[in-house]
Image (cartoon, rainbow, N blue to C red; front, side, top):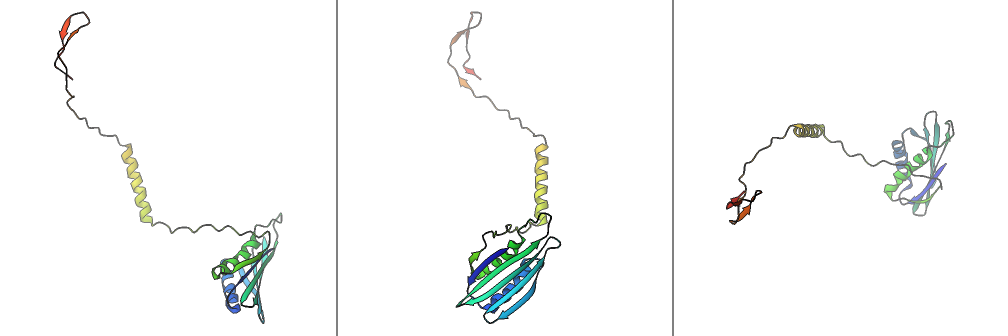
Length: 185
């Protein structure tokens, strides 16, 4: 069982209508079962059938307390899988109430200890146009072809730098004296 309570400002009929409209949109397979109005109190009951695995009931009680509206949501269900393991379906259905009331600045005043908010994946960015993807793939292909082609080397002939040497005599290996040239490369 998942329980969560909120308080905030608004009109009872406006909040009730919003919950009746938005919860079936947020949680697939949920439909309005009962809607009871008695004075300053409204009871809304939703049911959600998840095939053979589970059936859930979401009861929402709206009461007026002075200038604020108190919203109590209780989700209970029957899990009929092999091990009786709860996959968090109750928390997901109760979380739908939070998603409806949060933009209206309703604050949570109480929740069950084992209530866990379900993981909501981040928004997926808009897809890239197919033409851009094809161009980028073609560019990668062209770059790869260019990298596999042999490189054409350019041989540049340049003159070596001349260094001026003094005129000195040097003995060769065999003891003969020889003159060293003025310029050496």
